[in-house]
Amino acid sequence: MGKYILAVNAGSSSVKVTFYTFENPPQAIADAQVSGITAPPPTLKYQRGTVKMKEELKEKMNSPQDAFQYILHRCFNDPELSEVASDRDLAYICHRVVHGGDYREAVEINDETLHHLEALEDLAPLHNFSALEIVRLCKKELPSVTSITYFDSAFHQTLPGYVRTYPINQQVAKANGLRKYGFHGISYSFILRSVAQFLNKPQEQTNLIAMHIGSGASICAIKEGKSIDTSMGLTPLAGLPGATRSGDIDPSLVFHYTSEAGKLSPGSTKEMHISTAEEILNKQSGWKALTGTTDFSKIAVENFPSGAHKLAFDILVDRMLGYIGNYYLKLGGQVDALVFAGGIGEKSALLRRTLAEKCQCLGIAIDAKANDKGPEDKATVKDISQGAGKGPRVLICQTNEQFEMAYHTVQLRL
Ligand SMILES: Nc1ncnc2c1ncn2[C@@H]1O[C@H](COP(=O)(O)OP(=O)(O)O)[C@@H](O)[C@H]1O
Ligand SMILES: CC(=O)OP(=O)(O)O
Ligand SMILES: [Mg+2]
Image (tube, rainbow, N blue to C red; front, side, top):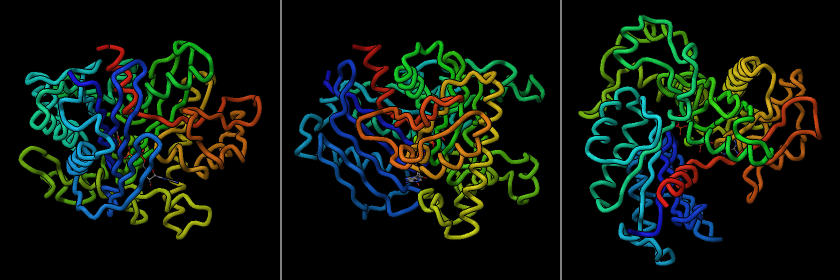
């Protein structure tokens, strides 16, 4: 068996791949990310030891699968990364799969589990399809390496019945698996462990409002180390708006948007069945629909380039504020920290400042300089609160879904 772990995180706009040593805790030896898959040209960020590179890619990349194949080829053929040159060097491949249905834990891929996951694909066609394409590719091209899938939904198994249940016919709901699942759970698990450690508290006594804000964005209320509510639902479409997702809308809007809504979309393939409504609300909405860009760094700027950019920013702030208020009440005001994470949560000082100002009535105050500076390379968690304020601390957590998967693999298999 090889000595390294390959962790793959296929998100909606990026593919992040990290190679780790198979030891406790795992150490990253190389990290490659292709981002901008939804806003070409794609860019590659590659880090190996202390060497960092960033380049625009000329290759056309239509999907996370293309990006994964590109990264794998590049890493295996990098003479400076001779530790991992082929499947013989790998012990495990960890895959982030967004929708795990009723799975409570990670599973090892074999014919049976892969078949079960394929049956779930229709519940989250836009996310699971790409992840499973990568799993299938690894099975075919790296057949000697065991693949383990980690699920975004598993962290939210603790949602109370009244939170996970939609008020619809319960027979229909049960027969079709129609309930709130919640996502970004691999990230929330990383955030909980890192923040509890930072606060020097046991996880079972830690209460957080954790915000994973990236191309897909969600918020989670964590009470005594357990998810008690989260903004995404049956699929990652629910809750906050995202780069190309509408987030919550009145469900009736679908019936008025276009008469084609219920038909299969042109994006459907033999393997992936999506309706026009799903395609529109998942891929043609969000801030892309409002501003034309999926890049939030072009939206969250001090002087908004247009009214549409300001509107997109204001909508995100408004919806986030709604969840913060909601979860503050659900946690009975006992909140250790408000945590910003994800590409936007970690990088947009403007978003954090705007929200902190609007949360002043909860006793929240941030240190302007610390906030502007943002996260620092070495520290996973950074406190940007102003002194020992009355309210919850405000933290930035550099979340790392690849590390979380490698970490659990080592705990279970070493
Ligand atoms: N400086 C910045 N300010 C605001 N947003 C940023 C900044 N840098 C990157 N982003 C945004 O972060 C998002 C990507 O976040 P990430 O969590 O990596 O997404 P995903 O995992 O869904 O692919 C993109 O929308 C990108 O524009
Ligand atoms: C669940 C989800 O939306 O994931 P991502 O933000 O990586 O697209
Ligand atoms: Mg992500």
